[in-house]
Structures are given as structure tokens and as C-alpha cells.
Image (cartoon, rainbow, N blue to C red; front, side, top):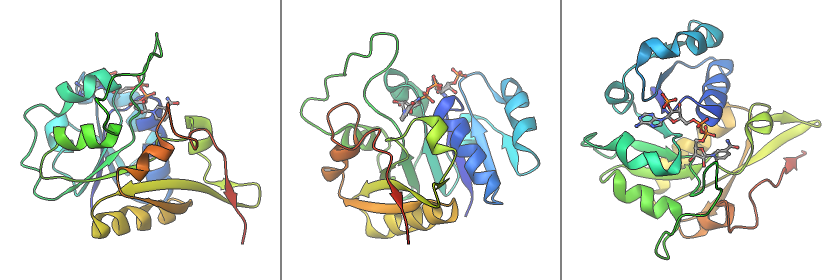
Amino acid sequence: MNISIIGAGAIGAAIAHLVVKAGLNVSVANSRGPDSLAKLVAELGPLAQAVTVQQASEADIVFLAVNWSKIAKAVEGLGPWDSRIVVDTNNPIEAPLFKPFDLGGKTSSQVVAEMVPGARLVKAFNHLAPPLLVNPAAEGGKRVLFYAGEDAEAKSQVAELISQLGFYGLDLGGLQQGRLAQFPGGPLPGLNLVKHN
Ligand SMILES: NC(=O)c1ccc[n+]([C@@H]2O[C@H](COP(=O)([O-])OP(=O)(O)OC[C@H]3O[C@@H](n4cnc5c(N)ncnc54)[C@H](OP(=O)(O)O)[C@@H]3O)[C@@H](O)[C@H]2O)c1
């Protein structure tokens, strides 16, 4: 199973750190090309490599961590997705205005799923700010990470990765239920839950 991340900003870099800390390889891509990621890749160490967006899109599990208004452009021309897993870490709001985008009554993941037709989309890694996200071991327990999706097998693979990274994964249900963790609107974003045994 290989893992990539399209978007190497606050959330993409946080996830990359988690992946290499768990001893797994990760490929990262951004809009400016692999050379612009040299500093991040040096920080991440030998398990990380910088790639193009096209190369990143060919991984078994592709994290999408791009500013909401730029996602469509980031994934334009990629695919066929051939049932590979896309992890949607995105929320439909962005700086500097922080005005929610109009989703026409859909959840943000339903909108993103339409941009990557044929992929099995799992919503996750979107409810915590990066400083919390990079520390899955918390207060003597495991930080809770929500996930949601329509495909049970894809969810179970992402759930396994979530555990491997050190979190306690909590299945919210389908993409409609994923709205619970969507920012803004859901009651769960920012909620810092820790599971104690
Ligand atoms: N920050 C948070 O607290 C937080 C928490 C939860 C969820 N989220 C969500 O996570 C997503 C990413 O947020 P962020 O805070 O990480 O944003 P960010 O720091 O601004 O990083 C955005 C990344 O997206 C890349 N990107 C933009 N256009 C692209 C394109 N066409 N192709 C490839 N990559 C492209 C940028 O690359 P370049 O720099 O090369 O353009 C950059 O690496 C957003 O949807 C946000 O809602 C953020």
C-alpha cells in the first residue's frame, strides 16, 4: 500500500509527518512542483519523497489537502481513479474571508467525490487543527479521529491506517453523516476527544 498527499501545507505536512513517524513511505505534491518541497522532504527524512501531482494521484491511498477553491484545479485531468482511495481532509471554507462556500445542499465530501469520479472517497483528518493532529498520543490516551464514507472496504483500510498512525478512529457512517465533522456546520470540528482504555 503506498500513500501520497496532494497539498503540502498545514494539513498535508502534518499528515506527512504522521505517516513517516509510523515508519511508512509517503509521497507529497503541491502546485509548484517537487523542487519546491525540498525543505519539507528533508525534514520528513528518507521515507518521504516529493513527486508531481500526477504521480501522487497514482498511489493506493491519496490524501487531498488543498484549499477548497483550488481542489477542482488540483484534480483536473487526474485519473482514472480505478477505485483507489481518496482521503478528503478538506473543509468548505478558507482564508482570508472564512465565508462558507455554497455546496447546494450537499456535504463537502459529496462535492469532492464528484471531482474524483471512480475513486472511493473517505472523509477524515478534517476536524482537528494541525498542532493537535500531529500528536495522536494525548493525555495518556489516543486522540479520536472521525472518518466517514460509502465504501466499507475503503473505510476499513483508512481505519487501519488511522490506528497505525496512533489515533482512535471513530466511524461516523456515510458521507452524509460525515457532515457532523465538517467545518463549518457540524458539531464535531475542533472537538478534541481522547480515548482512554
Ligand atoms: N489548517 C487547518 O486548521 C485545517 C484543519 C482541517 C482541515 N483543513 C482543510 O485542509 C485543506 C488544506 O488546508 P491547509 O490549511 O493545509 O492549507 P494550506 O496550508 O494553504 O496548504 C494548501 C496546499 O494546497 C496546495 N495546492 C493548492 N493548489 C494546488 C493545486 N492546483 N495542485 C496541487 N496542490 C495545490 C498548496 O500548494 P502550493 O503552496 O504549491 O500552492 C499547499 O501545499 C483545506 O481544505 C482545509 O479546509 C485545514
